[in-house]
Length: 219
Image (tube, rainbow, N blue to C red; front, side, top):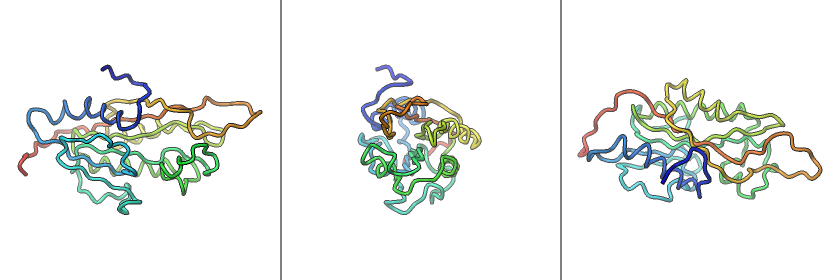
């Protein structure tokens, strides 16, 4: 099956499975080596992992609501994980009443939304830095992000996230565009649309350059 840069995935789990098939299993843990050490720092309801990473050596999950671990202060040692999943709140709605999707705020942890895209992006950047610290050389970091409209102006979340990843000495390995619905934006009868309505999010696949240390499978 050909994987397109932009397509309508049934759900995030199918997208993540395709990313693993393309960027994790074939390149880094072939020829009989044990599976990767995987960590999800924003586990939530575990919707990314409805498929089972059967070849994983370890799977670690963190979520502030589940175990009190904030992704801006991870307990893991430097260069201790091979694959990290990072799905932060990436839309600053400016208030829950802007959502027309009943469970959107709960699903993305927006019960206490950030006041501005800039403050939210600063929090995302902190998390990116921590993920880069914990990632092993040649490890893969998957980050969900989006460009969206806030207070009538575009916030280029995708580009801010990529830019900070590059400042953390990460390399962009791939970008997947997940086409979905029209997003949590209200319909206002009689109003004139001024910006294109977002119907997609991005999954940025970063790689940490450097020489990967060979791990003894019996350790």
